[in-house]
Length: 312
Ligand SMILES: [Fe+2]
Image 1 (cartoon, rainbow, N blue to C red):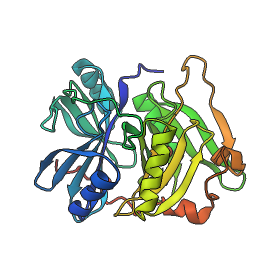
Image 2: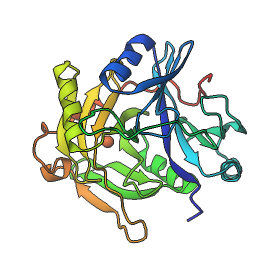
Image 3: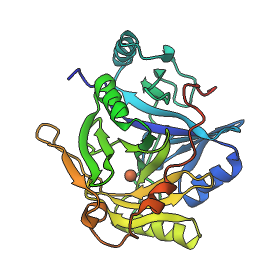
């Protein structure tokens, strides 16, 4: 396997038609902090995270994933990765350069196999963050991003081959076959996952809370406010993390999670879990049953941003 040059997930950037409503949801309800704003842009931080922001919102007529951003350790690693992608025929949006987004840094963007815009950066200034307190039900960090793919096998292969992601576990169903692949880029069980879906789109973005108590308090706050819950609360087998999935005002699925496991990468062997077994979907048995109607809610609208780089 080529050397892994991606260190971690930084942020997920979304374009939405109504920025005000989306920003209000992600700050007052979801618990992120508006760290920087610009005309038509909002950069939202998680209080416990050193990242400048974990979500960027941009107002645009087309709902889309603007980009998914990953960290690298150094400018040299950014250059090395950009060079190897270009040599392999991956289409770069721009070559490595100094970044103008909050925190600066050095990075480049490219299109993945299905046209998602991906950014890799290093040397971004660390944000002043703080420990999230006991009982404080706000996100500590961005945990993982899951995308729908009409060609999940091809997409998994792309991230393994070009970015050295490693497969942690796979979910399968006796009738539908393999349906979800969990990929890691460090010891966290997954920072990204690929779901089989009808089209490329955001499946969900997941935010880690401090612990079980804070996760349940956060789940309860959203329920009381009448935010539509799709699935949960429960505890997955793959990754051993808890889950509560909600819909944001634009129909993107967002998740509160906690206690995602870390793996020993030297000894880990991927499992193939049959999620028709209820214990696989939810070890606790507290979540509503997963069925095709629930699953369909996270197909999301077809992404309008494939092979179109966002303007910022
Ligand atoms: Fe998740």
